[in-house]
Structures are given as structure tokens and as C-alpha cells.
Length: 147
Image 1 (cartoon, rainbow, N blue to C red):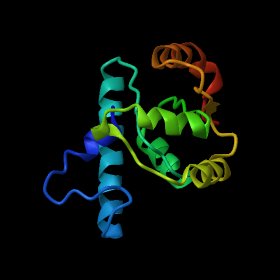
Image 2: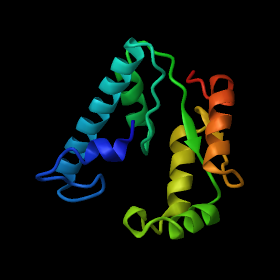
Image 3: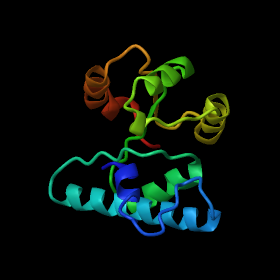
Image 4: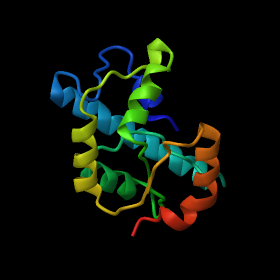
């Protein structure tokens, strides 16, 4: 489940997660997160293994997600390529899919401070998307368990 896609279901009055007014952005982020978890629960109830693909910027939001995933085993994988790789990958994306951002160093240090050793911090710098997916499928059940 793609968090960005779910957030775009708000058509009239959509506010980006870091947009203004901040209170409306926060309300829409919470709505998106609730819907992502509801979809994940529904797919899990039907016998499928759901994957939520979204940005979880802090421990408070991670705990919120876990609280909504009704007694499920949650695997938390942080895709953590090197900063230079993030910047390069952004330049080769379709222009409509680029995310211009200058705060990589701050984001990385904030996330490490927020999450510490929670989950699996997976450096995907030298991997293709297919190799990344393959390793997640095979290694996440052993490396990404939430304590």
C-alpha cells in the first residue's frame, strides 16, 4: 500500500504532509495512516501479507501504526541508502516523481535519534529495486521484527 497514493485520495483541499496550514496537514497525515492500516488489516484478514510503503518520520507515528495493526506481527524496514545515492536516484527519476529536498543529513540524524535500533536499517545503495525486494522478502522476517 502506497502512502503517497492514499494521501492523494483527498482531491479538494489536499495538503502535503509538510504543507500549510500545518494542522490540516497533520489531520490528513493521520487520516492517510489510519486508512493504510485499515487496508493492511483487511488484506491480512483475507490471508495476504500486506506491505505499507510510506514515510514514518518519528517514533510517535511508528507507534501509532503499530497500535492500529490489530495484534499483527509488524516488520519495520528502513530503506537507508547513502545520501549521495538518494540524491543521484532522485535525479534519474521522471521529473514528475522527483522530490527535491536539501535536508538529507538532518533527516538521517533525526531518524536515527528517533528510532535507534528499531527494525532493520537496510542500506540499499548498491542494490537494484529487484535485489532490494528479494532481500526484504527473505531477510526481513529475521531482521526487522518490532520488539
